[in-house]
Length: 637
Image 1 (cartoon, rainbow, N blue to C red):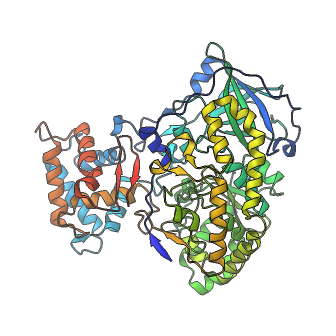
Image 2 (image 1 turned 90 degrees about the vertical axis):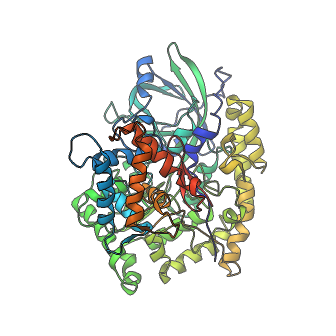
Image 3 (image 1 turned 30 degrees about the vertical axis):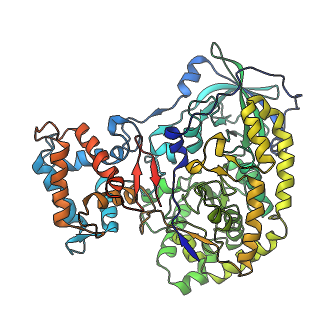
């Protein structure tokens, strides 16, 4: 297979710095489409080409209260109070670890002693040198950096925005859905990348919880309604069509519809049109009963690149990574830990023989087949997020379900690399280290199912003409509602529906490149996959983007690379004790600008960003990461 390192960009954050904000939706209320009868059942609500009318009403106080506030004490949040960029991650740990006598002051001697202590602690093999992996592991342990760059603080939600301390709160509102009013529902903003990309716009994703304040309240048989703004998808179709594709492949996946969303806030918004949203079914107990036809199973929403890695017997070490959405029994917790131990410690023969006892191999083959075909890297394939895991109470096996697919069809993390987008390997589609996939893809029983589904779906649901027809159908259904947003948004829709590449989300896209729309992607992807299944092409295998063994690509991995770069004076890829301690001494002298002999928090923060975060640029090394002014993660190739 062709091995290549693909540049990585956390798209959502980058847009805050480099890309203009979305234009606000048209504030004028225009003529509405003919009203529909309000749905009574989930099957009526989730009609994929239906465009419902939704009107949310807030008091001014509740509307203001819904605006999230960053957690001031969270060291992962952006913002200069705790140090911009990388310093926001490192400063709190340096302040705590560097104050060795606990007098609140960090002197030159203490700073030097800290360097010596860290080197000794991290040089576990006592070789007198630190490798990149030792630095990453040492930083993670010393400062408590999370194992995933997308994990929030303990007990809070996960995701890019959550990792910066952004939390959403429910406020009171009234919901009017096709003329039917439901009083006192809970509404909050939602999302991570989409949230950060919708700053400066009224059109933000929202979650409506009908029974948050009124127990048992439902509408059309559901208790929650997700309104997704699709700001990164000019077609408004990526998520809806991808979820449909999973369902057509026999994988449980949320159902969808569309909504024209209006908001009233006295004195601020008078039934103002916010734009066209997609309605996405919530993966909750309702979903379990309605779609999975089961009850009392366990639903998880993982955020980790070390899925089912052995973390010991203490569930507290697993909980944040797995983010359970249901109350767990002791048996369910035990099952997760048992599978993790099995995945990590079983030899190859035992693993092949017994993996089917833990993982629903047939369902997983279908799930991975579709995930790989649509080349969605903001998933288990790249980011370790945007999927659900269900522990089926009937079989005691784990099943996988997709989520958040607005960047599917090759529209995430590829930049302008058309070859990687169209020819992603079907036998090694993941980026970086993913032990679960590495082991499962070697199991003959799985490979037979997996390749068999590719052969079947290549002739049925993966046919390009089928997608072309769906795009035309959906574009016709949503076009009137899109037209009301703005002429620019409509122009993008018309172009992508016709198969013309446009900047992603109306912006420059990854690295300024235009994004190939659904029609163009499927036309290229279908023959590329067929060639791989036939053994005529190896496909493209992605690089690891600087992830090291066991670190899951988290902040410790990225910052560890910067640390090595900044301290490795002779550029041999390792750091000696002399280089390490000399680097700490050099930093104190350079950063203590007032020559007081006492390091202030501001001096430490500025120094870390200047001499560590920018070490890639300063030393012109390749394959590292740098941080922008608000913690933006950039990859380079």
